[in-house]
Image (cartoon, rainbow, N blue to C red; front, side, top):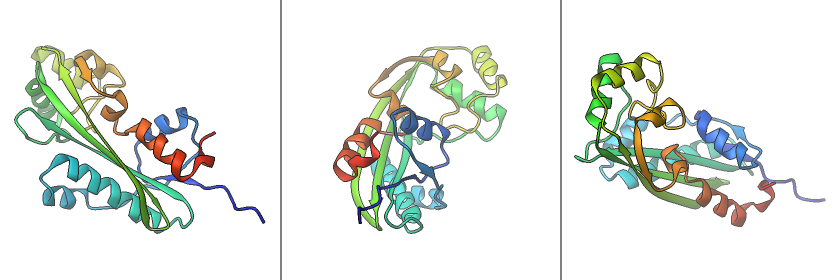
Length: 198
């Protein structure tokens, strides 16, 4: 009897992570993890370690529900130049304030992924990328907020959409800005479950 092909389960509600994987030719299921991200974040000060811990905890939590499947957990932590962590805006006024604070400045995203199979972490991938904002005024920030974009995003913008107009440059992988170290994940899958790559 031949062995059933491996399944890939994404432990995330992120539509952009799902799209990146599907666009890369992967068939997958989605089963979002329910972990206390705030508690984990408050316990780990180092952003790279925080991102890896969050990704791993998500993959392990979902992996327990999917024996025999490869479960992918991924997370991203953003840090401003002053070392403070990026958050999601709490309301429109906070959203405008957040965007203006980033005008003409850079931030660094630390992204991590963990691949779990049968409750064992089989591979981890980490990356980081710097995003530099162009200088813009309050009217630009207010117009962006009024457009209704970025309210649920870390940092308050979506670089894959209209938020690209706020950016001067990206030093590193755009995939990492979007929350997934895609090339490293694909390489890890080639070693762990090549049948998943169509």
